[in-house]
Length: 97
Image (tube, rainbow, N blue to C red; front, side, top):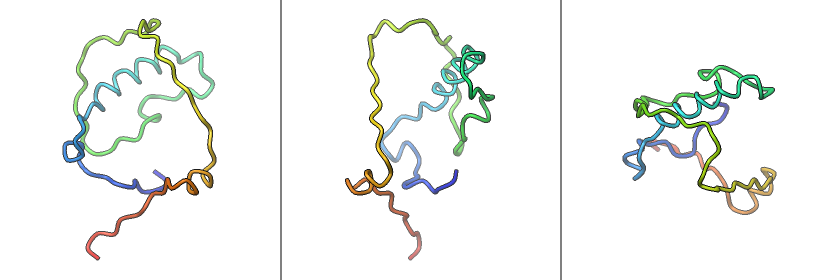
């Protein structure tokens, strides 16, 4: 990573469930299925940065067909200076000081 993470702590301490194993299964399946369709395709191990010990995947097949959930995603572009002015700042924590 080019910059340190703002806050790094075990997922259990953050009150979150660690689902990285299943995410990796899904992401790898999508990468393999779309290998000839995306211009910046790269191997799975090059596409993600591993962080600590990750749990194993859950194993069920990854359905790659159209979703029946009718989800909508939107991307709102913003520049870093805009995000900083609105209060989205990453503070580096110093330990032991």
